Image (tube, rainbow, N blue to C red):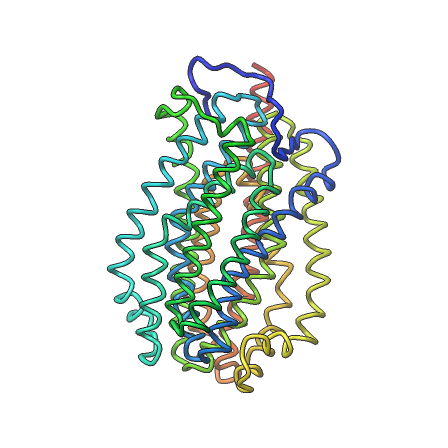
Length: 468
């Protein structure tokens, strides 16, 4: 459990004008939905950044330009993961302190997480800018799309600190149970991104460079607006000089949890780059199809991801309040909600995949490959959902080890399974998408095993604390 700020004891949470949600009391399903629905809408709008880039570039520039953006997705994800994991760690500590009722420590955690979130993106963005071209070459990025791919990823590197700003503000607000405020500014940012995409790509003919610049500007506006509003409306963001002092203990806890989360996502990103290399070996048509299916699956991830985030905040607050019965209830209700969504999405992808792919491209070979790929991966959505549900609960409990375990399993799977499957004559390029599903299944099973181990470990710890 994180330590509070010296000299500031536990206090009753003050009411603010923002939509903070205390999740230590009340109906579990209702609380999860109240938190998840605004965040789900927000995450879908966040994915629209990528979708709008892909649709506008694919329709107005062509399949090669779409492939150029797709070829950078895993590399960009690596850079964002290294930064945003720290924000995730800060969010966990903040939610636990909020559940505990330590107002001074909450404010200190917001400040100290902010310091770390400024330094990390600047260091990573600068390093990544100079290494991006070499990494893309290692991934066997087709020469026809190399120049556009390098330009796009370097724009993302320059804007990394701006993109991370929104994720920092949103993670702090969500830790306090407020998932509505980030949504408002994200919707505005998405609309701005669409307008700028059309301006830079369609009107000014700037290609993938225009799409990248539009994304960075929009994220920066979203982050600054969200943070300014939080300072005005939420008392936890109005920090005194004492609140803003560097707190070694809190910073240490943020890094302790944030670094494993960063490394987990980084391992996944690196393994995605290994998968991208396999995809690239099949040529531009397969790269374009993989890009389209990846964008669609990013949308599918969102309900699972928001449910996991809701469970993380819910678990963190209840663990801080020492209500383990509610933690277990949240896990079971989360599984039920995940299963319902998975059952809904399976027939959609089985019967309407071709029409969905057609949104991105008009080339028939790309559409045929993409539609069949969606039919393959949709059978594994339940296992994908399992990863997010368990990850949310364990993250809220402060389990730093699981993040690494999960990252290692996914990384090993993506390095080994695609190479084996595409080499089978009966599968060929379809081994790409079968490998995606198999890796989800392996990670889901690992997640459940870790949950059962860690649940008993936490219960023993709390029983010992009661005995003392």
